[in-house]
Image (tube, rainbow, N blue to C red; front, side):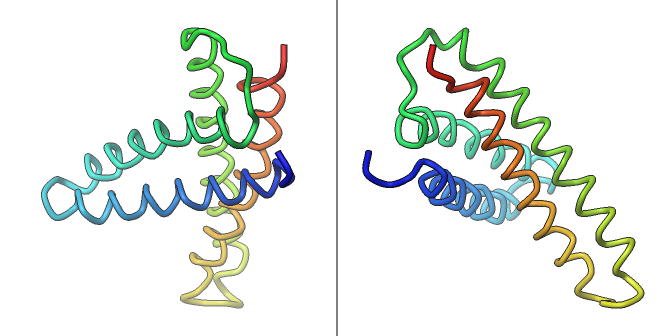
Length: 129
């Protein structure tokens, strides 16, 4: 592939994030918020699994049973990093930035989670064997 896989990860991850957000809004009209976010996340993770494996990392074909557990673990770690960084940044910057501290923290948290998941997917989930 001609384009660097870090760029492909940004494009695929951005698309998956937009899909997650869009389905979350759609489902929230019909379901309780927690279920809406949960279903949207499952859809986005499913799309991400195939997009990252086929387009970003160009993974060698391996049985799903070998690839799914590390994918779920990596995404769980990424989500935890996102939340922890977002909460930390928001609490530290609330006095300075007021109402936008939450958005700032969330954005930095998403970036930190993305860096972590890229490195972990590269080494664990979709590593060349």
